[in-house]
Length: 81
Image (tube, rainbow, N blue to C red):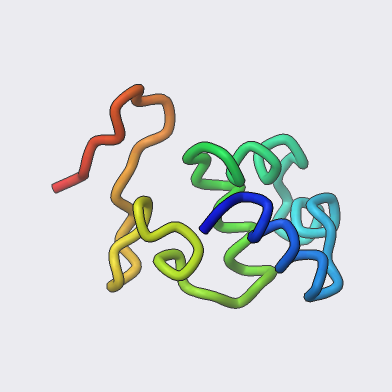
């Protein structure tokens, strides 16, 4: 899903990036960066706030069983075994 679509979904649910970050106890920057690149803490905050599974928002980052497929910081997204 495109980051603008995810942000619109967050707003439609009555949240902001700041409120999601505060509720999850992470920085707003982590949540903001998670929209564009893999950041585990930010992704968890968004997923918890929206109450959705990871593969629904980021099918390239999460398997259907919920396993995370990418690592933060790797230039080429590598699948984890």
